[in-house]
Length: 247
Length: 369
Image (cartoon, rainbow over all chains, first blue to last red; front, side, top):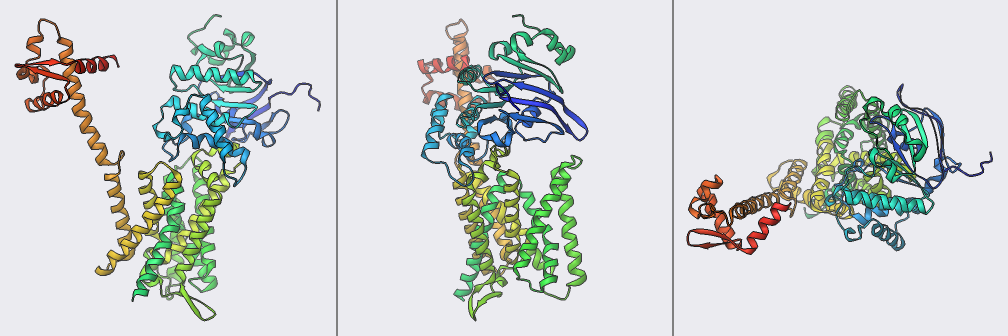
């Protein structure tokens, strides 16, 4: 199959179900390279599940996912993942630098230990997220925003082409939110593709250039300018949406 | 006589070290209860292997036990996956079922051989040295020592080789999976080692107290350090200290060695729990007390600050009346005033308290926050 310009992520007919209850129904989604995309939808819409299905963490009942025309297993080196901050135990006995170095493990492969170069890359990533002063800080002593920055740094050292992030703005302060947005936009400017599960509808138009509306089904997906419309919002959130920001 | 003690102490040291190493990962994965389940559920595996070999110290027993141990984990996780049963209930269902099969098999077919339930439940370190290993007619020490020494080397090798993978899979299993590190494989590898270690430790400490060796030292070390590598080393040291001191305490009183080791394990944990800097109970209590007095002083300076320069200031800063305004116990108020004077937050002029510059800035800072 010849594809003139490859899609960064191509999801076709993806259905994920827990037992017979569908969490995602027949999702088709094309993500072009170099976009900063927000996945929005109400609670229980399947946003996290979609990310996990793209990463092969949940097994689909039907359908297929391709990253630059190949299955995930062949492309894991070019995909970076930022899980929800609450998905790990922050009391784990380790420090900031060590967590960031975990992002290098994929490049190292089995058994090989991280070395001086990995340490330097981790330091650079920490500088990018403004956490270079916390290198040896025990991770349980970090604030929510700092934890999120550490997770971002860990994804940055993967030096991926495609990034998938699950609610990176969850529970962070305004300063961290701004820092993260700047970072995401920088990634896009460097030709990376960034997919973000996002909750705050107010900021979609400011932060992102693409948006996907999801509520078990894919409601709409495309550039923010034509896709972030009252109709799509209403269809995704039903009557529960109380505001609409006019551009 | 010295040789006897030395044999027992060596067995205690290798057993404690071999148990503490995988125990660290069980504690961090919140799976210590699983080690308890495994230590019981492997009984039918041991019994069946014993029927095949008629030899209580056959290596086949360890392999059969390891297989049953892994089966326990599989059963528990299968039950859990149905979402009809929670993890603790699943563990509570699976291990008594398997354990009772072992008990029934023993009572029906093996009541006349040396495989009694007491030995399995409690073990006996003092007797472990009587089963000795001979190669070409030379006595090379108790079998227990070789078995647990072997397990120690195996556990150590596994952790040294897969340190990075174990750490990642324990801290963030989904990242491990996305990077291709097969966390399920690592999980079952660890569970296999836990099962093998547990059955190896049977001879020395039995199936109940082995949990004390697996969970106790890592839980103690967890309080003392912020580094995984240090936690592993500390766990081994604490495990050895517990085991050796437990034996040395038990011997003169002629009481159960395993029981004393487990008691020492708990006492050492309790001691560390109390005295460890920063997060120990004593440190926390001291911090609370200090914060209580600091907060009281802040309340005092804010009170003075709020009324400073106002007509009622004279009345509000009267030392003798402070406790009435603030609704404090008079003795408490006296003490807070004394501390505030010592810290130069306030100065005394006749019967009045006046804010110093320092006290004023503290009040301002507290109010801004």
